[in-house]
Image 1: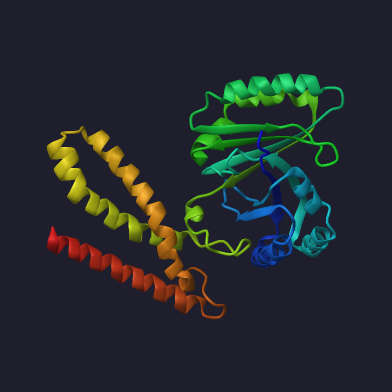
Image 2: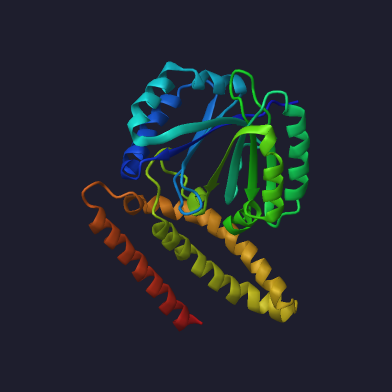
Length: 315
């Protein structure tokens, strides 16, 4: 059996006025973790209120031993001491085993940690099987992973739920079925923490240094639109109408689905390449943020208008 990698999942609450400082601190931390044996990658998921209010840091290692080595290192402890004034409350740190092809963050995930009362472990595991069966019927569930405590590493049971949308995740978390099950387990547990980590288009802008400040959503949306509009337009003109509609007489719902598949694949392929040419705008130099933001938005607005006029004239 090929050993799977593991990920350290750290969830922390940062003082609102220190968010930029914390992002820079994480950028500096990436330089310390890079040389560690077994280190693979680090991902930083900034807060996305109102659903995700915490910072979530995913640090992936080749093995459990490598992850433990980093957790116990003097370098990590010094970094944590330096960040203490920026934080509110305690960090939640957990180790989870990755999927066979590596950790795959979904559009939104809930990371739930539970401290079980001594001697109630068997009852808790039976309860966990019950809630796993119930949530398997929840709309939008993409995956579920359950990790027992690891002696000397973490004392909590950790469950990771992955859903396709924030709405579906929240609907399950708030559902009467789940609430009843959570109340049923109250006598078995000491502590219960639930954190949510969401992601959107960030995976298409992966050329940034891990730990950089989060990219503004409006900039990512503008670059996605820059690629999505011509893809949808050209596919409809050259493939959708002449072949899917007129030649094959496919129902509109089927043709639209096929068009969406092509659009998502091509957009995911092109956006990272286009984003590389707009790095100056995505992360402007300090002191020139406003001017650069306006310049980039004006350039994209001009390109939008040119594409619309071109398509109107040609088609």
